[in-house]
Image (cartoon, rainbow, N blue to C red):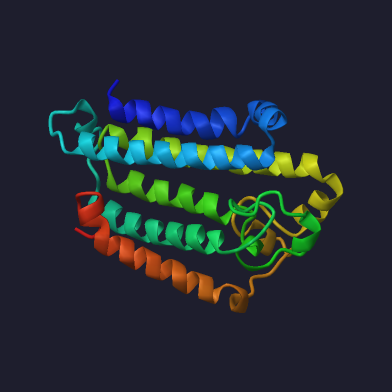
Length: 233
């Protein structure tokens, strides 16, 4: 195991082994919700910085076993990946800007205030987390090295488990409010719209989507400098 492997394991363990389990409740009982959120955020940022540094170091070493190819990426894979990454950015950043009881910044807000759900929450209760899942799927298509299933598969799975954990905590916190909120939303994107329990309102979302698109374009331009490879070959 190298530094990248340790950093990735620590990052996933924090979010799945602590935040998504009963250990979170035990810690909150000891130090309080507000302190827990502050400490959790600081540790998450520190681990993300470690992971980013370790990933860059690993990728810069051509002899690192994790850079060996597991499969050949087909020509169409990179084009499909770019589309998925764009969709992932739109979901994630528009989702961050959409307040709600299941959003990352707003988790814990009263459910009654967000019934019926609006904006990106009409599409899915977890737009940011599904953005991570779609982003990870796109990167799996574009990368055939050994590190890809570890990094992108691990982060995608972490996001899926996170969505389930947030739903479970919200339902336990306010069963009646959760029932109302869940009746007009869905975890799986567009499921509530397809089944007629909600409808998409573009006027509620277009500005957030434009901001998310701008973030995507900026990151695509900076990708060679931040990651070391161009976003568009």
